[in-house]
Length: 241
Image (cartoon, rainbow, N blue to C red; front, side):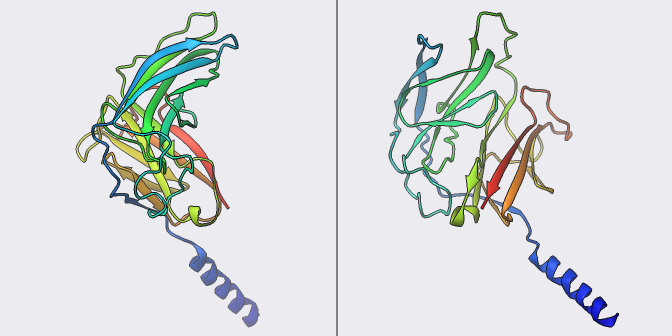
């Protein structure tokens, strides 16, 4: 009986020792690209009902590696800098040229485009994004109010393996709103760990165990209440191997 009790106590201690603490810390040091511009110049539809988007990009080069890529510990795209396209706050698609096509679901689609560094950190200047809505299909659809306060989820995304699991980029995009210590905030819930964010910057997520990770982002007002805006909150699952 004593041996069983001893084994149980040791197992509990080892189990506690295996548990890690999830942390988020501000990620700093990226080039600002404060004068970069992304402008939507044209939208057309082809014979297959795909939407074709044409952009003007100034002071930013698509398809090249961002300075610091490979040194910051973050997963990086070998194809270089790109445009993130987020439809109805779903997982983004990455586009490495200024002209590209996308098949949209039937209905009214709220679409955010923004310039992204090769390691997927968004460019957060007021000229580096475009927010539009595109209606697909014959029926009329209720339009979104583009003046609403929006929170869009960007990273992390998908599956991470090896060294890429050590530091994940937490990055989101705000439109028509700001966050601060006395104003709106973003609440990030990573598995069971909750973080209140009052500065719009990228963050490292560390201390995650392998397996499935649930990340929930909520845009809150100064009283801690969920802001009534489209696709708020947003939840993602990512996998660490």
